[in-house]
Image 1: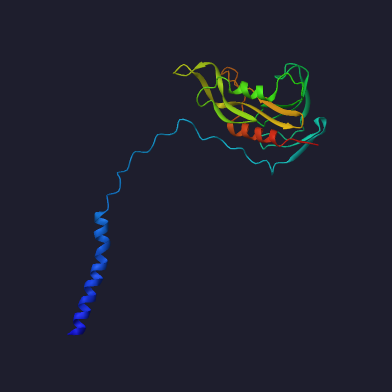
Image 2: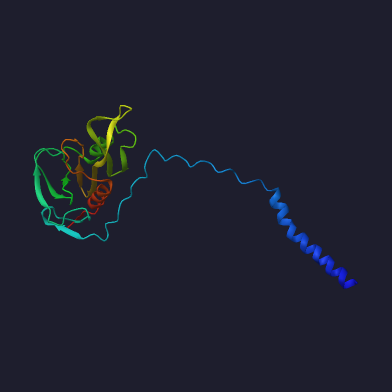
Length: 213
């Protein structure tokens, strides 16, 4: 009889132990009702710079520099060019290459006496930018969506291109800045090739890889 009573007591304890979580869960507040998915952010995620560590290293003896060639750039040797209408003043010598899609890329060496310095170049790129126009910027590079020439969006702001971007990127070495500038302004009647955001970020990484040789 004593054994039976003890068994019955244990059974009650076991049952009470199992029942406890049920009681607690019943007292817990119900999970919140699912809310509708948030609207997409107005600004797309900022692109990141690719690593240039594994890109082929190219020496350019004419300017006594080396650089890492981005996958979007042609493998042909770059050329030494002179642009009398360069953004930084006349008689500027620079290194000229291009992307595989046909966009010309020039990197000019700006010395102390350059007519257009790095800060002014980057400030000009940021000047008057409309929302979502600038997709990447830091203290040495700006990448922004090109404006479609002669077109306005519904709110009257400049219409931005989905296929072309503008960029300015610089690297300071000693007393000189090595800067590249690409204007991707889109005239729909011309249909000229432009830089995508991914290609532009590769060009920025390419400029940053420049070293003295």
